[in-house]
Length: 245
Image 1 (spheres, helix red, strand yellow):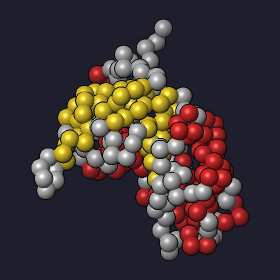
Image 2 (cartoon, rainbow, N blue to C red; image 1 turned 135 degrees about the vertical axis):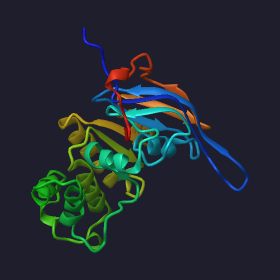
Image 3 (cartoon, rainbow, N blue to C red; image 1 turned 30 degrees about the vertical axis):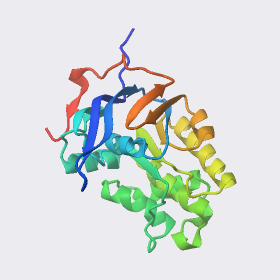
């Protein structure tokens, strides 16, 4: 039987940031693996380290210690160009704030990152993604002309357009009302399942977490519970690419 390879692997990871009062230990001895196709909810009270953990997995923050391997690439120690290319091609991110460019249409907001990644059919693909999230009739509208739910659909289309192996969400329904938020979550799970993407969601919403295959609970910068611990499965050393090397 072939050995399973983790898509995301963290081993003894720590994160320490500087402050006026001295070093602050944000994350402490974090270790887990996430397998291809899993949906994982990361939960915990404010300040528990959830968003910082996602920042490490997306390469937006560098670990102070330990190793972070995502889709075969060692992120700790990787240079910024390598991390940027990795995010553009292999990772999709949906945030609580929509981060749309106000002077660009919905179509342009989805297409421009694809153009930056060198995609030849950027606008055609962007149009298909907007159609997939139910916004075929709103492609030429600007963010100010869209509702909150529609703006988050644009953000979701932008995240999915590069066909990422992993889709990350940081409180993706935090700025939406309950009904709109549920519709976005239904769409998020439906599209990630159809595309066989791995889904990692940081959330305060227990109902959203319960929809995931697995829930990782955090407190005070540590993992206090993991409903699907797969730490025994690791990324073989010969399948890891060291970032920037």
